[in-house]
Length: 479
Image 1: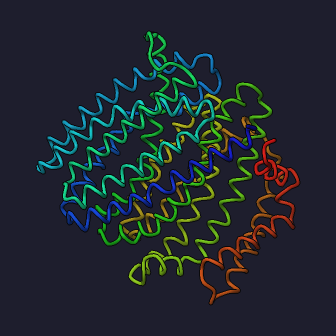
Image 2: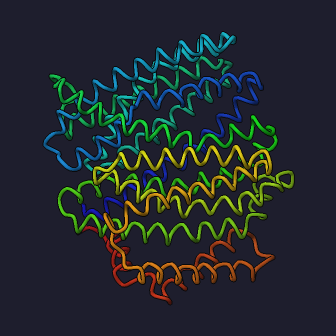
Image 3: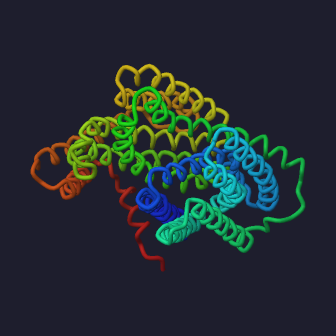
């Protein structure tokens, strides 16, 4: 299978897996709230909030590091796999013990304490799963990760719903989570051993220490990114009210769904970039340029559609009570375009062994985001968080630019500005199309608006002959 077709397959499967996860999980949340009440839902969310926090240290940044190392040198797969597995075992065990200790100190709810202790067992499986996903990514077989995510979530949600209706409590749901996560990890171990390398063997302790030092940078990047994206909701709740969190979250959910496409693509392109950087520098730069163009062309119409039709979308999904969320969505969705650019920049830095620069940029952007939220939320409420997100993502991209251009990626200024201008004109054509049909249902309007955008992109030559040939190559039947 060609690199282009493999990239398309990996991205499509990951989009399906990552996109369906929040949707099917939503049904579980509804079932818990209906059958177990507010207290049951609160217990469930509290337990898994602890898991979400401690899984960062359990994984220790190994996935991204392994993907790069193996993409660039597949002969070292076994040594990387064994050493990374040992690191994951150590840090996931420490994370599990720390999580159990923390909840025993902070919580007076016996169900939360019991459930969190059981859930801590999943951290070992989670840490090892990240190692195996890193190896699978290094070989550009990420469709397997998508299949495993889909299977895990469908089985977990199905069994959980059955247990809820059978009268079981939250603890039973925790055990379902632990078991399905463990089964997924065992599948990864089987797949990796069968296709790539044996996960077991003698540990090279000197190399393990070296790998752990490198992984530390990736772990810190993950921590910065997590705080960057989670701080706003926590700060709105602490400085304003739960109601404002609701208005903000209603719009924020559409941004998160839109980010699935970007994240799926960059996760698929990352091992390709790492391999190209090691093997052929010219291909690396060309792949970065093509990725920037593709994500730019794809994210602009998504942002235009959500922004122009925000009133109808919010009313359709949430109802009239969420009217304040309309302005949030109109503004917040424009985070998508700079975010897409930033992810290509970030993975280009990491693929070229400049992860410390990426860490620095992430740390400063995280700090800027927190400071902006502290200043703007007290004055503007949830709109302040919206402004903070928009400003901080542009700070993030702005700080990346001097490290990317022209050191890693070279794009002539006139070519870049011409592409931006023509894309802006195409976006304007889409806006005009949407505004010209005020009485149409939102779905056909968005489809027609998207068609106008594509037509304008073709007319102005933004979608080139090589781009059309690339699309044809993706969908061409293999001989």
